Structures are given as structure tokens and as C-alpha cells.
Image (cartoon, rainbow, N blue to C red; front, top):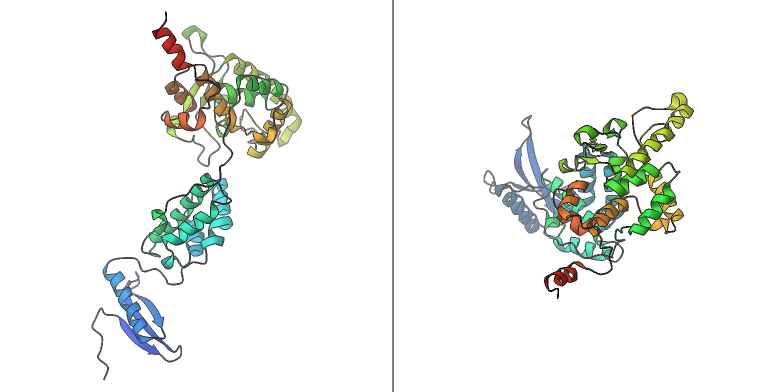
Length: 381
């Protein structure tokens, strides 16, 4: 007579219909009191026993026991569906494109329990042939977050993606800055266009494009209070992000307006009045400074298209430039003028100088003059 297994040792029996040994163990109970049973099977009794021991060991160690057939694609899909609530629609769509374009085709069929660090390393290494380092970093981050999401829901024991290093990919297109002459050419080319004030503010106050697209007239002071020394200014406290807030709390700032900005904004407001009348009842009054012809928030694609048209008119290759590089130019031009990096970081809304230095500031002068000029002053004859 077969000896009965002890309580807690799980069960092992032959299923005649499936022609397999079935290993099972109770790992808990639902809120309704129903048992939660995890199972494994094999045609060989010894292998089935080994799987039963693994189930019991995982249960006793307090480790998650994920479903055997749960794949990387299942984990990624679940994260995209439930793990991005409250995120901006464009952000979610960008994540979806990365996941469905790269992660799921490359690793989706792999069972999550069996995914190894080597699998991820090989996949990333293959992607280095066609993708930039930045894109590889994004892919690693999305996969890491998807597996972490699955781990928190008891689908897998550990997150092997977090153990993998991100390799170097292809060199991406580096951001650039206008020289003073190029910036002047762009400003001149923008005159008379609907984007003139937008270009002037981007280059002369360094606001992000997402901040300018959300700017309202109530946040613009074109007069100031000269009697108490307060110049014309603009309050950069909003953006087109999902929550309407700026990128960080440090990004909230009120900036004095150069006279060229004041003049450009006055002309822009005068130009906007006929557009409002022409639109008539179709005009949606959101109080936006840079609105579409119907008063709505301008589309990023349209802004980029019109900006590149202006850059082409300035004698440059339009497709090689993007609106965000006006902000880079603002930082670089101030740095080249000798403005301290700490002051520049505050103007652009950075919490410190590291990002300002590493990402935004481009050396415009072909020769670094500071050391030689200082030594000439120290060792002057």
C-alpha cells in the first residue's frame, strides 16, 4: 500500500488521462477561503518529484511562485496596461512603441521564470548593431520595470534584468548649439512669421518648448514696475505635461524679459487678434500665448516643422535642428559670455550644474582662452 505523504509535503499522483505525474502543493487561500494550489507535471516520476520539491522549497522560502507559462510578453503587456496609470498619453504611446517594436519580438516568447541574465545580455548586444546607447538605456529601463512589476505580483522570483549592464550602442545625433551669428540669422529669418516670438523667447530666456506651448498671457508682464525696479517678466510655472506642472519644482521660475522679447511679444499679441476674429465661434479661448489658429494648444509636430522652415531660411540645414536646441544655444551663448554656470542653471530651471554642464553647454569658441588670459595677467612683464 502506498504511504501517504505528510501534511505540507504536497501531493504526487498519476493522471491516467494525461499520462503524466502531477505534483501539487497548497500555497495559500483566497479571501473566500478557496485553496490556492500550484502544480507541475512530467511524464517521469522522478522529474515530477524534483519539480514538487522545487515548489515546496520556493513556498517555504517565501519566494513568489509564478505561473509556469507566464512569458516576458505577458509581463510587458500587463505593465503597459496596469502599470502606467496617470501617465501622459504620449509617454504611454512611446513606451508601447519601444516594447512592441523591440522587447516583445526579441524576448516576448521566453518564459519569465526561465529568463536569464545571459538572455538579456545577448538581446541587448544584438541591439547595439542598430540602436543608440540612449535607446538601449530606454529599452533596458522598460524591460526592468515590466519584470519588477511582475515580480511584485508574484509572477517571478527575481528580476534578472536589474543585474545586466547596458552596452554601448551606435552614436546618436548629438545636440548642437547655434553660434551667435547663426542665432542672429535664425532670429532675422523668424521675423514676420507666426513663430517669431516663440523663437525669440526660446533663444533669449531658454524656456523649454513644453513650457512655452503652455504659456498664458496672464503669466506675461510686458510692463513691470519700473518705479520699484521690477522689469517685464514671464512666469514659467506650467508645461504641457499630463499634470500641467513643470518638469521639476526647480523648473518653476519667473524670468526677466529682455527688451527684444518684450517687443516680439507685443507684436505677437497684435498679430493674434485678427486670427481670433477670423476664427469667430470656432476660437477656443484658453488664453495661450502661442496658440493654434483656433486658440488651442499648438502641436509639437507643427512647431518643429515651422521651426525647421525658419532654420532653412536662415541658411542652415533645417532637418539637422530641433526646437530644443534653442535652449542649448541659450546656455552656450551665456556661458561663452562668461556668465557663471550656477546662474545659468537657475535660469534654465536645473536643480544643479551637472546637467547644465554635461548636456546643455556646448563650447562655441574653438580655443579655450581662460587659462592663457589668466596666466598673462599673473605673469605680465
